[in-house]
Image (cartoon, rainbow over all chains, first blue to last red; front, side, top):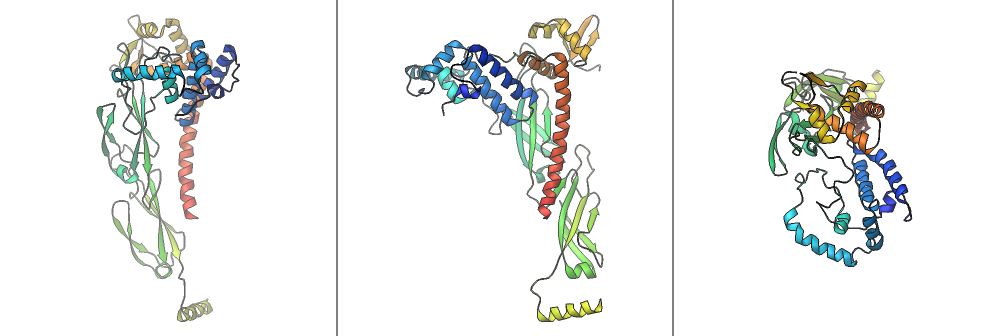
Length: 301
Length: 99
């Protein structure tokens, strides 16, 4: 846990007046507010940082305490008292658990802040943020392999102790977000529950490159098969296919296998195409005999 | 429409400490569609999220309703550009692999 320079967070000198603090905070809030920076983790972090700085510096009592003990918070008498108090109340309060390790961003304040000014339930915690009628929306990331979503993928998520069954539809895009209505935090005073947003992050460790619903793959072809033609057995995403290579196949020839691509999201039974690109491998380390034969071929052309 | 869950604007006014006229302004500017039934005014429950976003921008950042409309339009544009960028990056990744 490190010391946080709240003046620096707001780009201010230690002598800043309350008006200057307010002005600096408002300017930065307009820049980093999460509603104008959706899906931007860096802005979210900055916004929390400036909010925290504002919580401390815009409150004369907190600012005085921070100015006095801020840097030496580890040794300050007050800090020690605070810690004692915290230990005694910690048992009852119990911080809200986030989503198990997959990254709900619910913690509002840094450890440093909480050790100086106390954690959840502090009087100014609700501070600048509007009180909500609808419950808080929750955001999570789910990391899956590309193979997982070739078919519908049922998954049980543990959100704050509640088990939620979801099925990730086959063919979902990397980075796509699915919304599960009403599975966020409960609403206040009869307000609707928040929603749960799950962002799907796909890792592709296959030989196939996905572009939308189509899959692309490079196939290495030896020179002789390319020239004379032949059969070639190759993998599709979920099985194998025997390809007829036409004689005199050129390098970079593309072949489209209809319906052998990735499933189309929410359209059962529909698939994209598999596009194969032949790249012809020229032989290396030719023997004398082979060179002779190539010379002969050259002479014929 | 029949099965749509509705929230009474009056309830929301109490909760957010707003005047009913604020909702009419939102409707006038095209940020919200109000549902009227037997002298009562409602909004669809699923629009509460949008409403809260508008309120946050209004209260926390002091943006007026016209400004919010501009912001929301730009955000839609940003989102579609981000989707396009993701797709373009996927394609680029494929060509990079080929080199």
